[in-house]
Length: 141
Image 1 (spheres, rainbow, N blue to C red):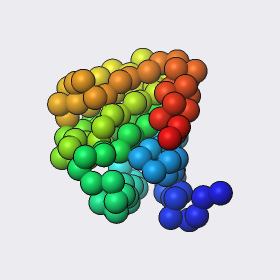
Image 2 (cartoon, one colour; image 1 turned 45 degrees about the vertical axis):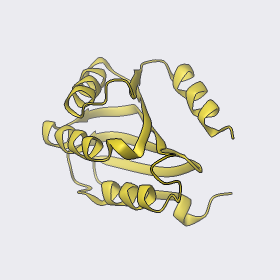
Image 3 (cartoon, rainbow, N blue to C red; image 1 turned 180 degrees about the vertical axis):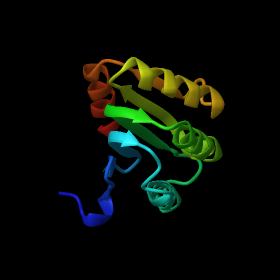
Image 4 (tube, rainbow, N blue to C red; image 1 turned 90 degrees about the vertical axis):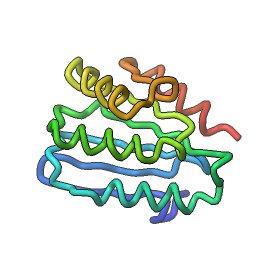
């Protein structure tokens, strides 16, 4: 069972984001809708807090899973902001695995990977079964 600190929800008119501490070193970011930036920096600040309070230190960075299968779109500004955030926190991330649900979001994810210099640690999945298996394996001790 998770405590409120292990799961956070941000709701907007067009978009919702749920953050879940899936395991000690695993964070799930679940996005639904169209991200136009209406949630501001709140999800990023919450992620920063989790990364900073993980107690894992720099020798054991987090694995970030982004479930974007229910995302209809994201503005260029929002994509750029997430790319900049990921680039800034690259050292705290062991890996980033993102599931996309459309070709548009897949192209956006590829842009984010290149812009954030995440080649080698970011994988973009188009198959839910692949994403779910990776998440299951990451949760194992």
